Length: 260
Image (tube, rainbow, N blue to C red):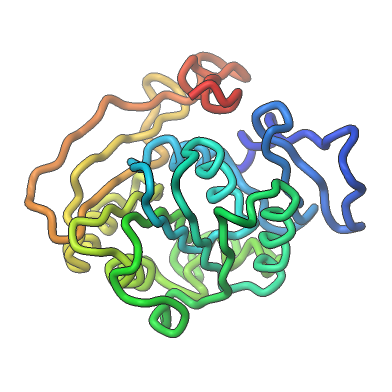
């Protein structure tokens, strides 16, 4: 859904000047600002959908695996005033940009950014140290589809430095018993996702399919699971992104405007 994101990325007119290879973009009418690479990985609507879908409770410690520019922690910190968030990211350039974004939004007391590899998460975090984990992992298998020449986009889109199993194992390691994991993933890989979650001892409990338009096939799936949870999943009503061409549906429009 990267193309969708372009419709709500706007440079801040009175913002500090970005570096030559960056843009300064805003969300929620300027309430969240962040630097992004002009040609590298840029956040999409997926991040907003995930942060709205994930269950959060006051006082919880939350981890974001593959935090990129730090957009998910920034949105979550705005939506939930009493949670603490740690974003884990493998790419050093993204770590540095995420740290700048946290500072830009004056969220240093609530958001930490840590460089770490999901394949070796025990090197940077203690087991069972988080109440919830969110994750927007790479969607495509290494070598499948068109590979971007840009390193940031390659790693964000394809399983080059971590497969789905690695992200789920990292989440299981970080979560306390009965802790929650929320993910957004490709709808056509739903079976892979649900099967892998069970193998990681994270039982799927809520699922919502995302469709671009009414009558089209689902493009994404949102899933939340509980570590050590019992079987039984709630299939929520579908989320339809567009009412018609170039016009968001009411729910998505509210998310983009920050009304939800």
